[in-house]
Length: 465
Image 1: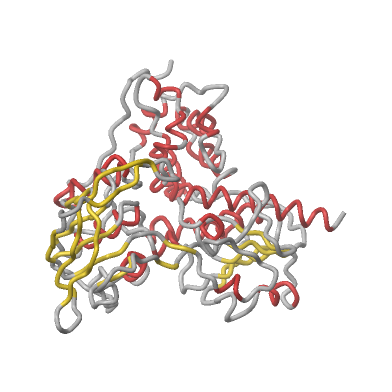
Image 2: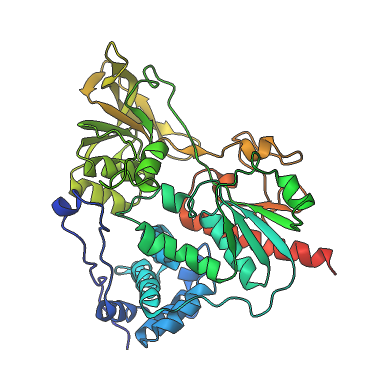
């Protein structure tokens, strides 16, 4: 009989005032007893809507059934058929709007805690030395993947399981893409989780070469013409930060969230045994309302700042995950909602000393369907601060497209690629993730990586018939 409890098994976490002063993982996850109990809430639906809600189509009832049976190795292999990064997804996926959002139990109670169960299975597999299963025989075909973020790792993993000889080219000195440089340690531990997932992909036979900038170190055409790759997948992400264009934005003490988080996450600025420079503000203002803004705000808080998050819409329209907003508030981040910056104030040495803002109200819906924020005349005010962190989104770096003839982009500088296969306008070149859509979630990038792998497989097979 299923466990018909209407509520999820609670997940243990660090106390807010304790974790706000360290970079240890906030959530402890389920232990075996808790996982089995929560898995028992799954109804094992025949027409599982949760699978429809998963961008990589994990057989969710299948792996949860294995958890109920305490066959944790079997549960891991079920997940691994569809996902190369289960320990990552179990931690950072927005399950509440995807798989859990479709869960039948959620109609009259809380949905099954699918994400926490996925995390448990992945972590247990690591403890038990269980690895994903690769191809038994190589097919003799070579594919290059650009970028080792979630799209690239997923595409490479899927292709390796099909028997392809896959090499990933990464511009930075560590693999993982946004998983390594963008998401903080307290949400996604780098060695325990990210590095382990990367090693699992390498264990499938994938080679990863770091410090290679496509478009500078080597061109896309050279990979095909000189290195002999039959197809290429571009999963280079969207790492170019956006700014508001307001006065004072070039002052000392203004950062993009991308730079701020990269220094802290990839270059370990938060650790005393590293010399990476990072500005430790007394009072920081973070502009934005997405997950990256929450990450930047919570990071600045841990580095000792009083933190205010400024967002121009209402709290109900914050694009960040509800869990991240909740955690930020618990830890002491102060939210200034319906507020928009108009100028960054500086001293005679061009150092940030404050920010000028204006209050907003919601007007008519805009193109996205959300009510457009409009300024309230006469509501301007100033806030003292010594750092401003801009978290307004990112766009793809144009280096690859600008150095590759025949590779088209749209008006947002994103690569043009088909939804069903990830096929670009250049023969043999496929793309997916943030490089195509602009900044989005890890799991959507993974879904695009799977689409690209299938497209490449079909392309190479059709060429060799």
